[in-house]
Image 1 (cartoon, one colour):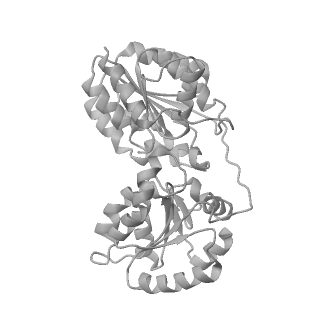
Image 2 (tube, helix red, strand yellow):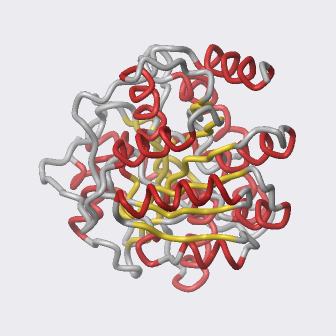
Image 3 (tube, one colour):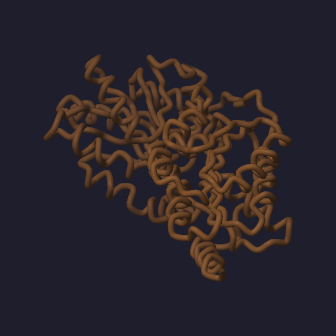
Length: 373
């Protein structure tokens, strides 16, 4: 189904969400139609954030908002759905549009498999009636579903459209870019070289894929790296947990701007504990690149200032390879909690592969390396 037809049938004029590759047609349509005009479209930090934002929109206008997300974000909406939107509380109607990664019998990455299995069950448990949109869904069928949904929405219930792979299409192209020049893979090469035998925890998405391929090219083993698949926004907390319990090992966290924003409270916790053996690198391309390239709020956020306010003793920003190398060496010598933001271009190699080891194998190799010294 063409996205233009889909949004016409939905009939909403306010969308907020977190980008998803399965919803690329919708995301690109929204960017071409509204951009980031906050009266119609807000890209949120996490799915709970946009659910609450949608509630505020309804309180102010009486209209029904749309929240879009990948199904991995269902966990982030459980609290606001159960304690804010639910008809037993404030009865605030919301239309959820959810990309179905890990759909049963459809090949996907390991982090999506279990989430895909429980996607519909989680919605059922939250009292959200769901309809699966597939390649075969026609306009009339969708209109009939939306007609029944409007009755539920009028009663203060929430509803969802779960979007199967390839169900929505959009012919217009959207190109995302920024003014920065450093490539993420280049940045990670510099980090890996500076880290040496130290341990690295890398965030989900292309950053971990690039780190894996860098190790392959260099003929290095993968035991020094924990490649966080899924769990967006939690790599820094994983790194903190390792750092606090292995004070004899230096831990590097390779983070992304979208991931940092998703659970930014982790910075306050890290700063309050202030582990001297943790170096936090934030690669900031101001985009959700792994799922398409839609912008994050990081282009307008002073990340080093936020880190300093959270208690990081040292925080800086760089945009050149020379400055990056200098700051990495200084951080390694400093033996103090440090944050380095690296300004980054949008883009990755077309032939970028995926790790050839399983998540379990990655965990076991990482733990074995930690235990070896």
